[in-house]
Length: 355
Ligand code: NAD
Ligand code: DAU
Image (cartoon, rainbow, N blue to C red; front, side):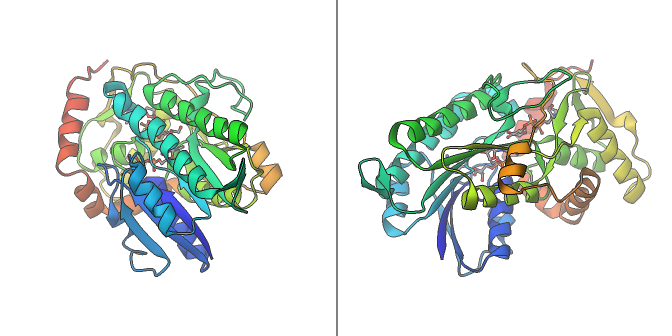
């Protein structure tokens, strides 16, 4: 029985990971530590909430006392650190919380794990590992050619990606300085069930269904490399099990699409399956995101060759599964977007000029 301390397990990718692991293995125990910010929702986990191998603890990853206590009370084998402030737009208007959670929180997790796992000078309990869930955004932006590789220099632009890059450097520093057992994964844009509807795909889906404006930043020709969330979960599982200590693994599936293509795909899906009256007239090109990265694209060769990982879900299949999930779970969308989210949404989009 291996015990995983998963942070941020009530968020989008974290909850998919917890469900993935408990469905795949009978011999893993998951302790999910989440602060339950606006992005964390225990409803995501209701299918596994009563699983005897699952425990939820509400705590902040910056809270040294709470995290140390968890290490004292449990024999933890692996830490998987998903917990983060994850939305670029929010980081542009409020960078401090990104430094607090993404940088200070990561350092606290590293320190607590190191203290708990140390058995001698720079030696640790056998088999333990700390995995930092990072992002392709730490590499900055690409031109029309080329891909992000693990040795691509870090060149973050937004407060969000700068905080994630900073966290990665601390993880690397723990590996270099203390020989602390770590891996870092850097994944491209995920999509799938339980993504908070401030992010492009669920936001456009929700707005189209409600005949609201569809805000496309700038010309909409920015490119993201989309990966179905379950394929990301599979990659993390493989890196924990077989990743070489100290290594970084990029995760992506060569599914580059422009934002405008994504928006039009969603409109077409709703037109065909739900409401024939929706049309591309809902699209509003608005003021661009500040410092907007133009293109992301991952070269996944290393994780494919080293660990045999490959993405199982094509974009065409994954996007239909995702949109169907949102249609079948509109009550989830209503629940998570009630209250504070409405204020955020109004504030975020009321200042956006149509261009
Ligand atoms: P999310 O915003 O959906 O979820 C974040 C979770 O972390 C929430 O449950 C929230 O309550 C929790 N959290 C926030 N601050 C916390 C704190 N101080 N202590 C404890 N819990 C806290 O994010 P996501 O999209 O699921 O992303 C998860 C991780 O994956 C992040 O580290 C992100 O940088 C990374 N990532 C995301 C993507 C993507 O496309 N979404 C791609 C690559 C990497
Ligand atoms: O690349 C991985 C990253 O993907 C993760 O590290 C982040 O946590 C995650 O939020 C995501 O960041 P993006 O900024 O790429 O995702 P977002 O869904 O916010 O935006 C996707 C693209 O769509 C981006 O180019 C901005 C654009 N966009 C977004 C929104 C919310 C719009 O044009 N209109 C919108 O309303």
